[in-house]
Amino acid sequence: MEKTIHMVVTSVLILACLLFPVNIAMSSEATVKKVALKVEGMSCASCPATVKSALKRLPGVISADVSYKEKKATISYYDGKVTVEKMIKAIEDAGYHADLNTGEKR
Ligand SMILES: [Cu+2]
Image (cartoon, rainbow, N blue to C red; front, side, top):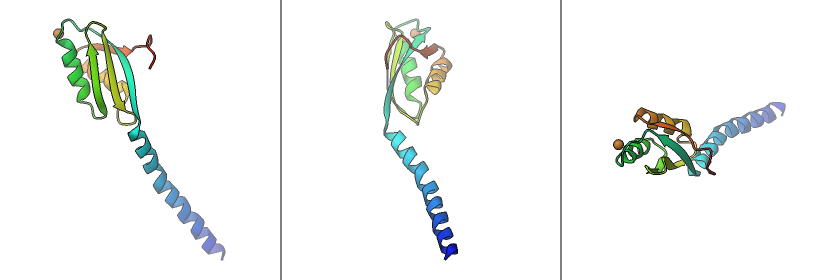
């Protein structure tokens, strides 16, 4: 009898371990977030297109709006699929400087 209970408890624990990570991954995939980044180093009107395409190449980025006048990139992305750090890295790799636009509410 004690063995049966032990087996039931063990299998419930194994099931919980198998199911929970899946649930977490699924719920974070569905969350769409927006972030505004300050972009420096854009020197002409075609620079935003370069920044935009660099951002859109990242898996998880839904859309990117880059303003030359405002020196700002507004990005919609799937939370959990891509990070703000990766976006900043992509912008830097494209030859510009980016950081979190702290003066703006998210
Ligand atoms: Cu340019």
